[in-house]
Image (cartoon, rainbow, N blue to C red):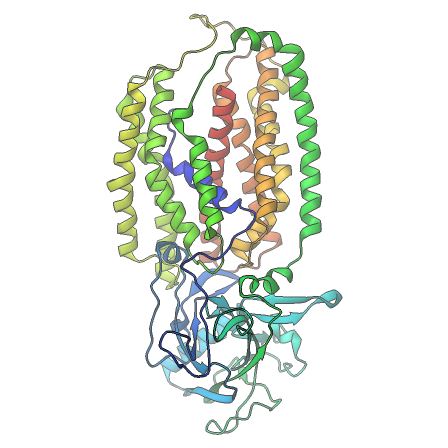
Length: 610
């Protein structure tokens, strides 16, 4: 148990930041007012800037920049500054050629025309890449006033779903079966053909500020509808046509694609600017499923609590009263770490408008929390009578971060080879290494210095110097069966919530049920601790005193079930194709499982040790 590592605090950071019931906009994300005419400088803006982000797919883990595809590009391209979290997540935001002013209607305006000449190798490669994107259902992600441009459409039972992205196009198989978005239009019926969504109808909804005390208007929604239109005359495009823009699989003739767009505006003062994301979140109702999960988990917790209470009150009451001493680990400052993370969450770091803040917060806290990591490691190591303190500190600072960085670097090499936007630039990798070795490692040594200066934690009971012989154990009190059984109940409490988390990561769905997540997190800790206490108590009753690693592995084995579920999710829920995407999925999943294993194992071990 001597290799306690500060990188193990990353899941604590990520989970704690996530476990906030609500979030609001940060002061730095102040609302922007728009108007037709600017009367005073700085009063409002007239032009609405549309930005484009990376394109991703549920069938591939590889995202790509907008420029990689042969779309229309802004002549004066600009990129807003990106924080560390955005770079690590692979976001690449840039300006678009779609220009329009506030409250000025635009009808079928041409953006550009792309021509692909038959026999031209470069044009053939560009067209093939577009076809590949349509076949894998790659999605655009556009941004207006720091909120996503959504595609809202009807689903079953009269409900409406708003997707913060829309597809490049769709594909009809040689058998005539339409894939993905091709099922929405009966005109998409040519076999072995692609249909390009080359026209978008953008609708901007705004809230006028006449009665609110501010001038101009504020945007509260941005929706769009993609359409496939074959423009006969590129100089006079007609967006009322019904003939779709089809592209055959074989490149037998020249292909000409004209991109157009229309913009309309609508006033709606019923929608407040602060709640303008609600229409996206309401379209994803899973509340009933969440409450069922919570009730199921509470039943497990009540059962375990009753068992633990019976043992504590009837069996261990005298021992606790006899040996109870005040063992204070406040120096570890665990509670302070939790409070800091929840405070950051309440400040709005969960706001979807504040892109990349979660990962930035995670990296910063991992770097700065090297001191408590080194302190706890040194204090426990001294308590266990360890003598190789230098090795202990080095392992604390380097072992787990090194394993994760090596895995991460290999995944990044694959992304580099594939030309994905998720590939982290070399300069960013150097910056992370500088943070690790320049700040985190020295802070770990500093914490270890103070930890070794403290006296060893005194045990409340006397132990024999000569170990007793352990009698023959039954099957259920042996280490492996107990460890395997110990992870089942905690996993049963989280697997439903895990489904939505994996959807947000791999299916690019927006996660917002942080209140439920907080409850599940508390239930997970309670269940892990109670299950571990019960099983280890039974082992002690069987005169098996080797509880150290058993307590760590019993709760940590929940991560093994998490990995098994991730495998099931990959084969049953995802449609990922290609060796590179498969390797990336399991590579990143391994990182998450390792962090979860260390988090649950170390937390419950410290509780059981206490």
